[in-house]
Image 1 (cartoon, rainbow, N blue to C red):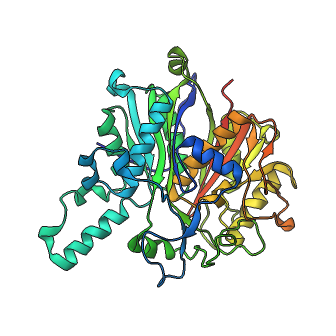
Image 2: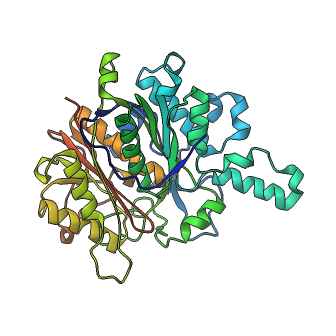
Image 3: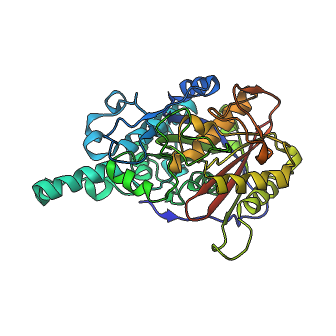
Length: 418
């Protein structure tokens, strides 16, 4: 059974277990699987293009980052297909890959020592749309019994836990795009409270007419039909983002348990902070800078220790300036490299933060910063934006940022594990 968790606040004190990441499972518009995604990201290869899942001609926004090369029948048993949305199928495969990467055999591990905590923004929209269509056109007898859970925002957690017999603490967290970072902090909390292993992260998809209509209500989607110019954060002509699908699931473990079984470690979840923006018109400062301060303090590092920032990169002028102002205030003008590889995938809702964290961990592994594509830094923002090609440099500490519609702000610090 899953439980809903919102915006957790760390309360544990005293000696605490260290949470490390030992496995990655990535399903992204520009690469299926960790190494394919990483190669495409370093090459600057974008997965954004015209929507193919449905005819977008009647909508103002017509581009998306779709995972076009994913065929669930190649990865999952046929019995799961009728009961799962496209989103959940991708999540199940990402979990399989993450566990394999971590060399974890769930059947050989204490079932109560494994938890699942995922982020969600909408649930199985495409599945729900199909069943609503059946209801309207044919009647209630033609609605699938699986509709009762396939649409649910907790379905990824439930299906992963059932598939792998994971009966430890589990849940789902809903905080739009920021939830993808919040959920990794929740995984760290479970590790500190004694759960040896947690599958965590987010995989999302709302690329269907019903989901598209909901996404358009934000007013933040780009209507530019050119994939090369549609999503350009920190650019003078920024005019909204492109929606994407997919994300990443990570295996988060207690460092001592991981070491005992000889597991390879990508890095450590070192610090976390979260805030809400103040009420519009209150005159108070946005909450992003405070979230960053909390994350750095939690990690026991200072701004001088941060080697690169993975930006939220909203591509909405006022939001870009809020983020840039927070970074300038903390690091100084062009004081730290900033990157937004999500310009190659689109913003993946709850899958975006986990994918950025996975990318940050690969950056730590290979000591390279991936580029922001289709963008040249606006000198007015004062950022050292990594564009054009990857930048090889010494990396130890990475700051990852995410914001969600409605005022959510989250920051996560990941570091090398040595």
